[in-house]
Amino acid sequence: MTMAKVMGERTEMQPKQLRLVMKQGAALALIGTLIGLAIAYLSGRIVASQIYMIRASDPLMLSGAIVVVVGIAAIATMIPAWRASRLNPSGVLHSA
Image 1 (cartoon, rainbow, N blue to C red):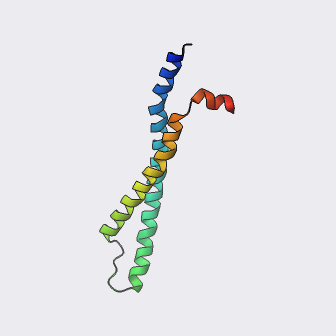
Image 2: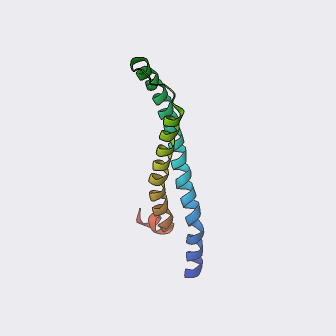
């Protein structure tokens, strides 16, 4: 096998590895966001019953929190995805 062929196969795998890791991270972020949204809504109702002029489901605050959490999750997932796309798969398998 020539070096050009090996490099071609490795270059072809990089987008697949990046997509795979990003997809897994996005799924975890979606599940965490949904659970966090439910907890925030329920705890907001408790706080709203005790504090005057506080609404349980303030759409601006909830949507802002979702944007921040999803943005942080995307950045936190992109770093390992980028590192995984840079690895040589056969080198990783041989070192194990």
